Length: 320
Length: 292
Image (cartoon, rainbow over all chains, first blue to last red):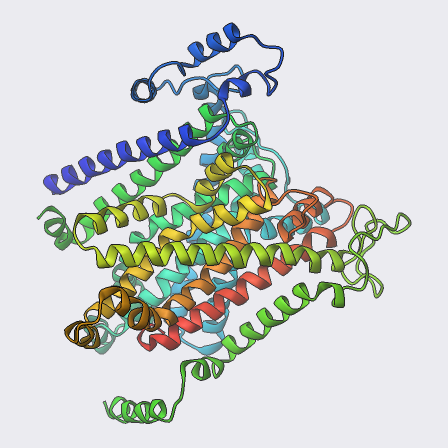
């Protein structure tokens, strides 16, 4: 087990380094001079000396490998460099916004799981046509429905008409935990529906597959209740593909979060990302992309370790 | 056991009678409905000048933000323009972006995937690793980075979305081709001395076409989705160009004055994506019954 985890960690780190090089190169290919961004977009009445000074400040006068090493060196020490647009450091900007996104992601995952798992179990316990059609319909529509459409509908119904929940903004968790959860509820439901649909799309076929396994027949044959067979015998085995697909679900979450935060005007990482593209603030943009890539790699690492724990066969396969 | 044994021969007979894949597809009600919906959407957006009740630029300052009525099916916008008309005309941009971006994604993806399947060894390996790395990034995120690089406009949307969906297409094209490379007709063609380029163009490409078409349908759905998302946050199609995404954005900005304004463009996007997804899923099921 130790060797398995060790190899997975090493490959993940290698992937992360590759990813960071990719992000860095991508940012240098982008046309446009960041110094102009720093100056607010106008370059006419600036002399060469000032430009050179700003380039020096941002470290843009060095060679590309030097710039890369400097950036990575800073990242390792927790210093993400400075924003090309505002006077704040990238670290400040990101830590300010991190909480709003984290709470949204956690709540959306919870809501998604709370919808998908019981619904899939119900579908397996009572395999009848109307229920099946309803569940497949929900999964198909939930995947296809753009997050902004759900968001707008929820704002109209729960926010404006019924006035149950706040529709815009965010209260920080530290200052008011309950208010914070309340202000996150609408965006989290919006995002959670997509998560639920994505999970159900994987979990339900997997449950059906497991349903024809011999151990399920044995369990049914020895007289266990259907409920018991599904929850105790089918679900743990059917969960493996769903856990494997956690990466896809996280990707869905990250992409969805950008839109959802925009709809609900949440000061999170997603809106920061959109702003940084608007302002051509590459200092912030490259860090955010790196953070997303790191989160993604970390998820697949955790998934692999969990799968290794559940299914010992995978450990030997991955090492050899 | 008996059902399986009796089902297999009848299926063989059906196929022998020329029961083609398109026909089997249309026999599925969901696929038929989805196909019909897509046909209608394409027809009314392409033929917008014929179907639209007003000009997209007709202003009517006496009727701003009116709710849906018999005169204005979807209501009117902030300048009194008929929303139904604007959705039809906006659909043209969305459709053009969807078609051309899908075409680009398929062209790049097929070349990419075929190249990596035919060049085994480290070239093929590198090609696929690059595809995997790109696929590891959430689509919207990579899309935003590309918007930062190429700028936001209708033309750049086409390029960006084409690039965005090329890697996943490459994966599918590769696995489809690898399946064909193991087939006996490929070996037969090789043994009679046909050149590889000829076999790829004349034998392999036609045989992988159904799989690629199913893929193209699903790519188109995603292109519409992502174009709408990027336009919605203001980083996609830019005014004065109008797409379903920009209509949604403008509608969302005026949500408190008219519910219909953001809802209808949103619904149209939903219907288009849902129909394309359903069609693509069903094409896959018809081609590979073991998956259904």
